[in-house]
Length: 268
Image (tube, rainbow, N blue to C red; front, side):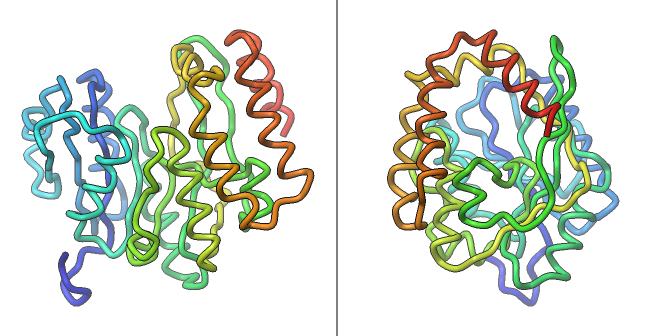
C-alpha cells in the first residue's frame, strides 16, 4: 500500500463478473468523466467472461488498473482483493452496470473530507430499470445504528469510505449477500459514523431478474447478518421486526414484491 504522503485521494473500486460489455463501457466512461480528477479506477476481474482488460485498454487512460486472480471467487473476495491493492486514502464503490453522475466523487468526497467525524458517506441514487418506473433511493442525514437496522443504509455503489477504517475492521465480512450491511454494522460497532448527503449521485440499475435473487432461498445471508449484529447494536422490537419483514418479503411473488417496493419508495 502506498504511504500517506504519496497516496491518491480516491480509489474507485469495481468488482467485475460477466457484465455485458456495453454496460461495463458505460460505467467506466462515467467514472472517467468525473469532475473530481484525483482518483484511480481499480477493476477487479473476478474470473469474468467479459474481456475486462481489452475493454479497459480501449479508454487509453492511465488511471485505470485491472487486477485479478484468474478465477471466479465471488463478489466479496473480489472487493477484499481490491482493498489490498487500492492506493487511495478513500475507497469509492461503484458497480459495473451503474452510471455515476459527473459530480459523484466531488460531492461525496468533498463532504467526507470536510467532516472527519464520519467514516462513510453515501449519496442518493436514482433506481432505473428497462421495465419499471424510476425511483429515488435514500434519505439524507446521519445513519445511526437504529436506522441502519431498520433499513436506512448507505447505498453501496454510491458510497465513499475512509480506507483506514474499512481495513481496521478487516474489510468486507464473508457473506455472499448483504456484505455491505455487515460492513456498516462492523463499522458502527467500532464507533464509526455514517452519513447520506442529499444529492443524487448515481443511476442504480435494477432489472426484473434482480428481484429473483430476493426470494427467501437467497436471503439466508441477509438474515444471518441481522441475527449476528443486531444484538450487539442494541436492537429493540422495531429493529427485530426488520428480520421478520425480510423473511415475509422473501415469500412474496417477484411481481408483487416489485409493486410493494415501488409504492414504498414513491411514498417516502
